[in-house]
Length: 74
Image 1 (cartoon, rainbow, N blue to C red):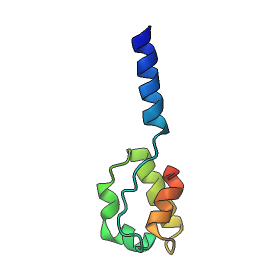
Image 2 (cartoon, rainbow, N blue to C red):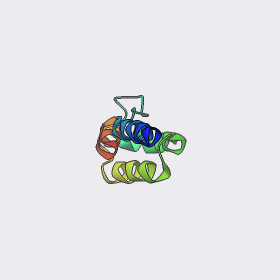
Image 3 (cartoon, rainbow, N blue to C red):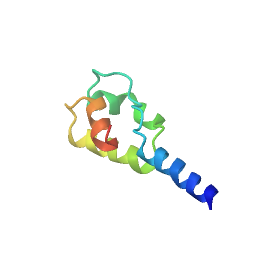
Image 4 (cartoon, rainbow, N blue to C red):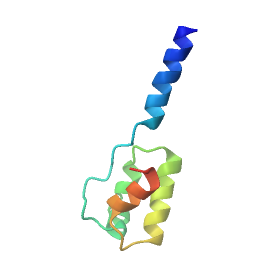
């Protein structure tokens, strides 16, 4: 039983931990980020990466870092 409690606690920490931003250029627009091909190198799951790409496509003038933070909750 103690092992199960420890595993549950560790899993809770991993889930609750905020994701680290992957987009490093804080001034780059979504349009420029998509044009650069940087979105193909995402370290996020495919689902999250697709949500960021879709958000950027819908909001090309927004900063890519802001789009990433909106989609990941950072």
